[in-house]
Length: 165
Image (cartoon, rainbow, N blue to C red):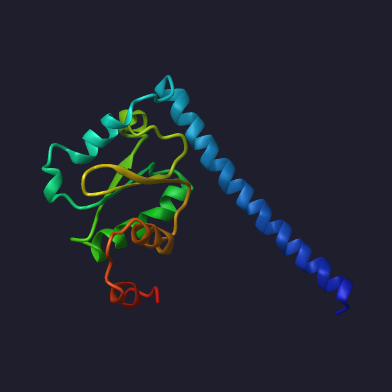
């Protein structure tokens, strides 16, 4: 195979990957647009409302940090997140809580948390203060890095035990 034909094959693969990525992003954008169109006006709720629902009336001194994932059951990136979130719930129980909210079933949550795109992941400290917000698919490794970056202590052995190291 000549160098020129190898470049052509490589360029073709690159274009295919780019097309797939564009389709996934468009699907996420359409899902978000449909959500907001059906729910009325865009959310403009202050952060206190979001923090109150995260705290759920619990004593903030005894609460764990919390990851809130807002998505929908039929959203493709949300479906990709589901097994990751299930693993995190199980593997890091006692370190941080994982809450999954389907904003197509609970439309008020989208407004309350000021969701623009699904999935959205919001990281809260133990006091209910928002630490970080991410929109779109978020890998397990990146979620754990985000927790560590914000001072949540995770066992170094645990990621190795679950196939991350």
